[in-house]
Image (cartoon, rainbow, N blue to C red; front, side):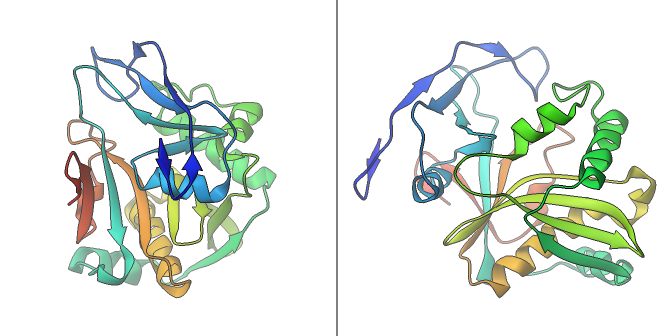
Length: 230
């Protein structure tokens, strides 16, 4: 794989149980060598994602359900529902940091136990969390949401030259009615606008997974097809 003199070697994993759809097998295309931030941003444009130092994209033989999706930041139009989410959370304080904290991990731990005890991230551990969010290319950024002095939501982001990649979000499930998942996407979009980024990458839209089918609500968006971003 080559673009702008960036040579990237990739391989393909064996099949294993799909993390997103029942009764399915998945396999991944993964980078084989260490890469830098510029190469990673190029790979984002090809539909890759990051988990720790592993850069991957689905490469399944009989399924193409995982659709890369991104927002063109300057074209984003907030919906009425999203405006209500911002209005209902005017009392939330947002700050950006590159520092890990025990409070972040505790919030992540409680979120995984409450929402994803049937998934591959359960049971949560400090080591698994660190391996998931950290990497040797750059420091991840954390968008933190506070109600008074209580940390109630975190969005892990990769902030790159021309884009922001939303890595993972988690929140205090006692605040369900505040739509904190949506709030964090909206705040990441605001940050991308303020820092002159072109794109906010949201990962994979999976229409048949109730936990992964919400990203089309952010419009206009682009999805990656065989013909490119559409």
